[in-house]
Length: 149
Length: 260
Figure 1 (cartoon, chains in turn purple, orange):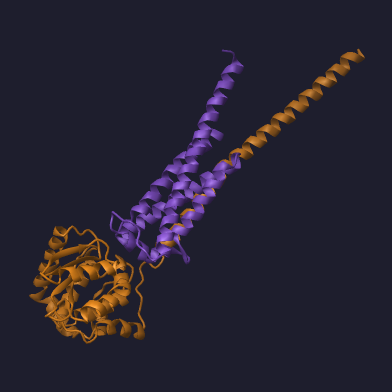
Figure 2 (tube, each protein chain N blue to C red):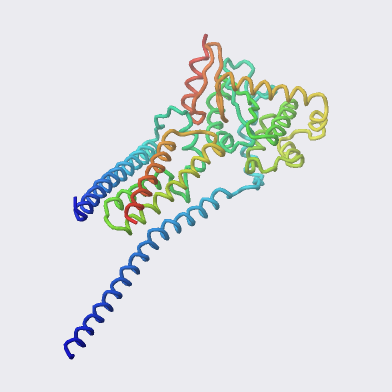
């Protein structure tokens, strides 16, 4: 194999990884949107979410369910939609913004989990699901950014 | 001669252009790296500051409820008979056990959002009575509050004390549950503070502490790990409520255990 062949093989390999990371980022953001949409719709319809941990209503009824007057689940939807759109945009600026968004989401999810454990004293499975999604999203975007850098 | 000079000039120009191009590429790369590192770092700093502000909001403060707010809270339980920590008619067939901690903010929210309707529907109608179970989960101050609540219960005013406490509740674990705070809550609740202090400094304290220990064991036996937790008990058996904020499930449990 000549030098240009090796370079071409590396580039093609990197292209494959990049595609995989983009798909993972889109899928994870979509999962986050579905979780947020489910909680928002259930709340708006006056019903209770399906809850195996038993604390979803307690969390939803707490004062921490709103941030500056907006429901946390709605903020989550907006965040994940932005992350999904950015994941479809090529270029290093989009990667940088994606990583920034994933970091903010992970910090915010960590704060919400801390609230559940030490302030609300109740656990909501949907919030935990969203927190795990944001952590995975952060891993994907760190990898993707390193690849671009 | 002239040709060689021209050749050297061309080489120099090419060299200059190459250097310029290399500098431009380097600048572009460093700008790219600065953006790729700088934007996420800035985002982390901003997010950390925002979360820090949110997390520290209201810490170390107690609310000083207005007289009208206190009166509205006390009106929730006004005119209902009390025996110790139990609110409601003795003849009520069902007992709702509320496992709660006076420092817990979600217990206060339960008191504000669920309890008024529950009292109207189930307690005032004589279908059920409700017992406040002092489930201490938030440390020494909660222990102090639970002891004082029982001293108020000895004077038949546990629920007025609970209402006053929650209405003035501060941020948990910030040391606001001082002797003067407890005395103020007792005064608001119509409790004789001198008698309450005598009970808390005398032999009765042991009984209060035993009740707190027993409540811990009962809570564990029922699988409760947090507050508020609800157990509904009647001739038809016992039912634990997985989510205290689901008023419908508490009321249907009252109905289902009311008959043997």
